[in-house]
Amino acid sequence: MAEEADATVKEPLDLIKLSLDERVYVKLKGDRELRGKLHAYDQHLNMILGDVEEVVTSVDIDEETFEEIVRTNKRMLPYLFLRGDGVILVSPPLRS
Image 1 (cartoon, rainbow, N blue to C red):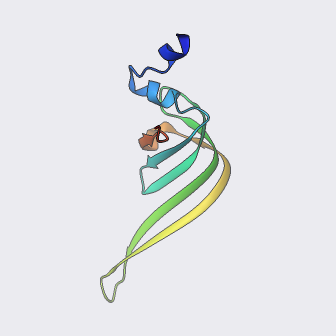
Image 2 (spheres, rainbow, N blue to C red):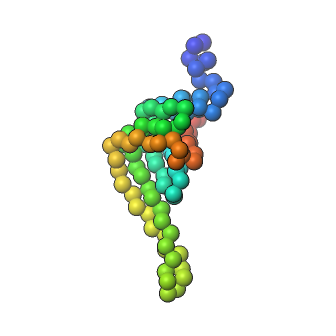
Image 3 (cartoon, rainbow, N blue to C red):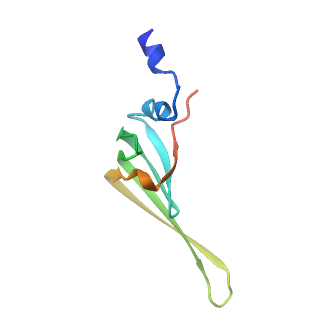
């Protein structure tokens, strides 16, 4: 019965609480995306992620052809402290 009460989502941060120790997707300002295991968070959405894959997307315009050139840079990080003021979206893992 206590587990059932813990699994209910009444507030937005309850959904993040259910995602502790699971891989989450985080979209940040500045065309940055993170995927990693959520170890901790607070009410400001500061987070500690582990086994993080960071993807940074940049769009440049070719001066001769005026075509958009999309570049993506990926890197892996063992741990990352993420400041919450840059967070746009947090997506928990899919549950069946």
